[in-house]
Amino acid sequence: GIGIAYRSPFNVNTINPASYSALSLTTFEFGLSASFTQFTTNNSQQKTSDATFSYFALGFPVVKNKWGAALGLVPFSAVGYKIYDAVLDSNAGGVLYTYQGDGGVNRFFIGNSVKLVKNLSVGFNASYLFGSLNRSNRVEFAGSHFFNSRFTETATISNVYFNFGMQYAIDSLPKRFKTETSFAKIKTDRSLNFGFTFSLPTDLSAEKNVVGVRYLTSGVLTNLRDTIINSSEEKGIIKIPYSVGFGAVYKKGNQLIMGADVAMQNWKDYSYFGADDSLRNSLRISAGAQFTPDERAMKSYTQSMQYRVGMFYNQTY
Image (tube, rainbow, N blue to C red; front, top):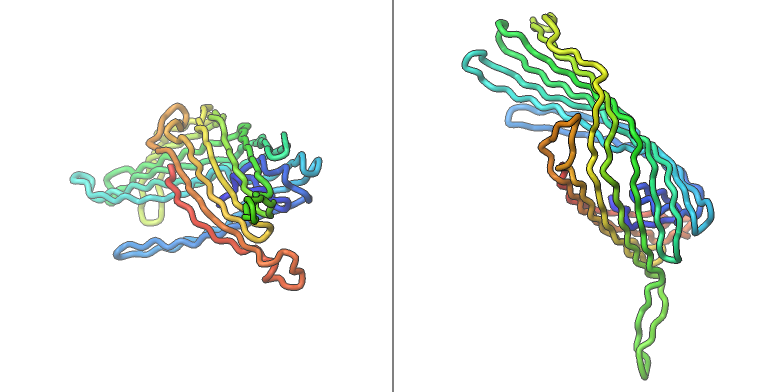
């Protein structure tokens, strides 16, 4: 999961747009992801699975070793939860509250990066955000003497978004060795990269539809009683807070890469159609390494493969 300081001539690193200036070949990437989850309580068990298209990206050098560009489609955020809360009410008996959310926002981006001086590169992504967020809340009673309620809200999002990056590379780290009379330095194949990313606070234009109904349930049948609220095409703003990230990567030739990232986002400033939420600032700390036995071993696939290991700590919003 690291990438703030990572530079590669063969990979499109969308985490930091300043990395595009390192591209030496036209590169196309795409990814798929799948998750399998098992929830267990003392007396029940539930399994879920999900498979999605993750991203695609195309990067290419405009002027080799000086100017690179990229475009692609990547996820920006996602919503996915379903929470049941069963309580016993002295008047109504058993009451089941259900809170459910799904959907997400995607980001189509076009980015550029230029090398300002020998070791310093800067870049930016201009993105178009689009997608929908769906939320549904239900109140259902065990008895037949009360009306159940369901509120469904769908927010459609579309807006322009910018994020920026900077990378500084120290190539050929010197190595000191002792001679008969003094110390001398020689250049090596080791290097050290530093990276910085940030995005400004953004107001996303949004439009939401809200429908609230009361109904009765008999077995599998639902008898709609009346509509409590029906609000359509209500326009508003979703405030996305700023984010910053720092990273460092150590490389030894084309064989060993080690790095770490720290990224945070000020989610306490988030608001949804003028309403604040009980969110906390997010923090992610990542570390990882990559080892390639011999990238030139064309006759041995296992020798030319890239082996990676990593871990992260994530305090979400």
